[in-house]
Length: 377
Image (cartoon, rainbow, N blue to C red):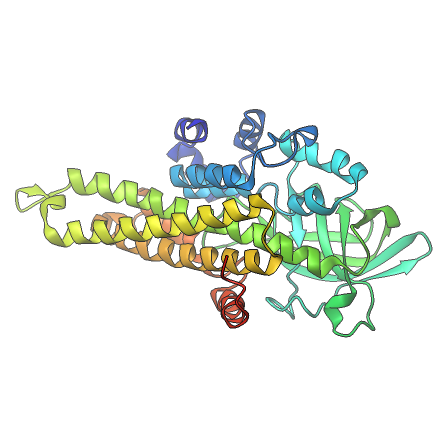
């Protein structure tokens, strides 16, 4: 497919290592990918997308990350947060921001996580209070993908401090880079995914116009749940792609590496590893494709989709970590060296069990879905 051809041609090891060592976003590759329509192809054509389903976007994710864990994940994280505008934004907001993403002129960011709350988005410390025709935002968001380079942020804030429960008083806002009272600090030294910069965003009496409100006031939490459904499907595709990429390399190495006078793929111990890896990858792939297809159908309840996405994300995250670990075992000592790609896959995959909902949080979602019957289609 076209995405695979592009990635195999453009994602060189030299470019990936440069991105790793400098911890910089690969803007050149992002713009090239955008020109070919690989950035958010599921966006409507009037906003620069291809008008495909989300499933097609997940396929691009998979192929990009399969080719290279660092570069692929960075490019696919460039539009982070923009799905909220595509789903819930006004026509004016969509026309203003989405073409910047699909043309590769900007990256975006979704700001949800806070230092004191982490996975608990039902309670927020960041507030956005009305002041005439403006809202005034105060608070801190942390571990925010693309924060140091984003042109705009989609920020979840508490707009009704008296709401009970608190999440019924949350709203989303589009905050542009450079607004007075908004400062960003880059967080460095990450274990993996170094091509995607993260940072903290500090809001100190940041005044934004009322037109920056995304969707309806006090509906932000519910919009975020839809966003997390899509985000977890995306994360699942990253897991499948990384697992497949590591498997490809392990298989190729096993055919070439000789021990005791013959290729190690002839040893049953290696054969069984590869067989188990392949089965797990295929199972994770089917879960991921299924949730992408179900989202595109537009006829399933949000609760069903949320549970399905949590299942796919959790399983793909676990599979990617297991498969990549076994790939390193196939490589032996060479797999522990930066020169060999599986080392980077190992570091890049670990965060899949943390972001887009930790494995524990996703298990809570799945368990509740099971008890209420939401996982049955």
